[in-house]
Length: 440
Image 1: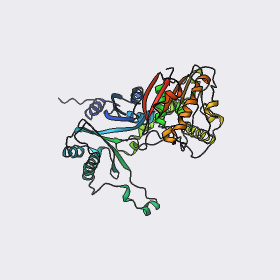
Image 2: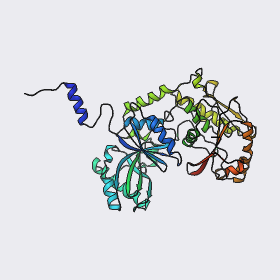
Image 3: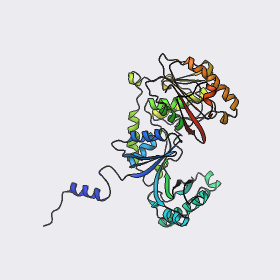
Image 4: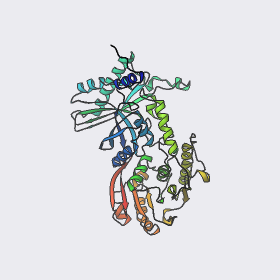
């Protein structure tokens, strides 16, 4: 006798056989790139993002990157919610290759057609080889591109993949958009090749609130990293006497008000075959509901202030704050110099003051976190060293405050006049820097 199972039982069995677990799809290997020295911060962030829909499991922390497993919802959570990561990449394939033939075969055997849609080009943006027999990075780049293109052309019945150069200047003037390009990164570590597809598009430090950075700007992700490394929490006052375009202060406000850094931007993932509009919308809505500007709540008391001697820098900082308000409230941020009204300051108090006249505006102690002028980046190391000497006065004007400084100068302590309680190396883009902490 044939027993016909109820529909819901057959449906569950079908879902199981197709490799799904109810609402949780298959876990995929991913990598979060970050500043060297910020790996622990990103690892902790990923662990906190693990939730009901975002199945995230941190695998290991490497030099400037953190490997993790996650589902589709977790990819969106990482892209929108990570503060200290520069990019999120999806691992297409991993295989061993000790020669170029093995590299070609491994790359051509990867299922590129499951991720890259027809009509999209492909570019190998970065190659890194370490302790491997394959060392020539330009050759690795060329072979990976050739093998991936051959696979995609075969699957899509094409002679060649679209390229940016295929759109003429005349066609651009006529409004014909250039093809979208999938960017790939290749890591070869101990002869193990990892092919990684960039899901970010523009780097994640481009939050959308900064249209001008001023002189020698600090990356948003680096600012977030040093804030989290310092141990600052929103219950403590925060001051930056070299606020510049306001990056440290704005990243602190985003953290204090629970504003996800990726809410105001798009990602390359949206153009990939694995994109899921419903999941993306649900994740964005989840982050929007977390934003809370209830200043009557004692747990939401935000005391953030800063100053800079350059009036234009302060104006840029105020404009950036106004753009962050736009993002937080779901509006498209406007470019250019803007004025923030009283309700649009995010609780950030800005003044035009030289560092020598900066003082604590709060009654209790807090955190002074700053990025003083970089000698190498501003072109005058002697002037920068003079500034470091003058910074010693901050200890008197900010008594019982914890002081944290990021600088590219390895001898900052000697000019400041005191050895730091903690010092760690951290990169700000391509600039190797040091994060000094006092009274940890």
